[in-house]
Length: 215
Ligand SMILES: Cc1cc2nc3c(=O)[nH]c(=O)nc-3n(C[C@H](O)[C@H](O)[C@H](O)COP(=O)(O)O)c2cc1C
Image (cartoon, rainbow, N blue to C red; front, side):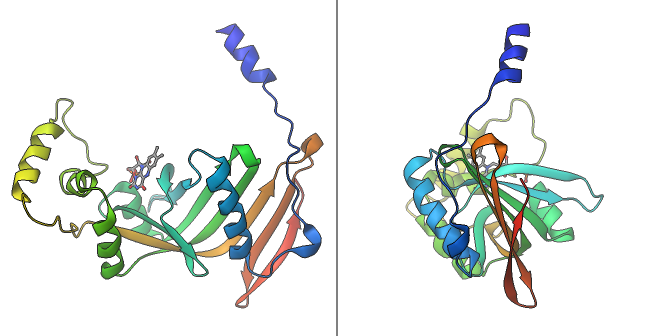
């Protein structure tokens, strides 16, 4: 145990791989996000995984890992259960935070934005591309609900499979996408001596303002 504690205390990585070109920053942060994601897809195991933080109506924060399924100038899209704990939080407070951590690139991206459900047709379209087992899973899992310790998903899966046998699995109405329209995006690049680079884009009178932050 004390060996583990000392390993934790002494674990240090030197940050020295990339540098943000501060003289040539793009005017729109999505260009930089695109470039960083492009590299992350090559270098990282879970490039599209990010932490989503929400706040409940009682002001209790919570975070969980999700997968990014699309992005463009208007925002970042993920899919989930609309009755889940996170969705209930978003219903009462649509301000959310996204955090991507890409250790092999020594990079972090922090996004603050407003989450909104995407059009049903877009959710249908994405749902239709999911593997059949995942489509069926969306029908049987009441995400975030407390279930019996011995709850048998295999039996539920068999039931739902026979219900849809020979048919297309439709999207359940309680499952779909959210798009997060960004208000600010911070790019963090690890540097030697902990003098990391931080560049923050924020929406200011409908334009992106660029600032550098101290590490
Ligand atoms: C790598 C990874 C990817 C995940 N992707 C998703 C996802 O895209 N959508 C989702 O609803 N849950 C995803 N989860 C599960 C969530 O982390 C979480 O357990 C679930 O959404 C319930 O969260 P909630 O109770 O706060 O609503 C993923 C978990 C991991 C570890």
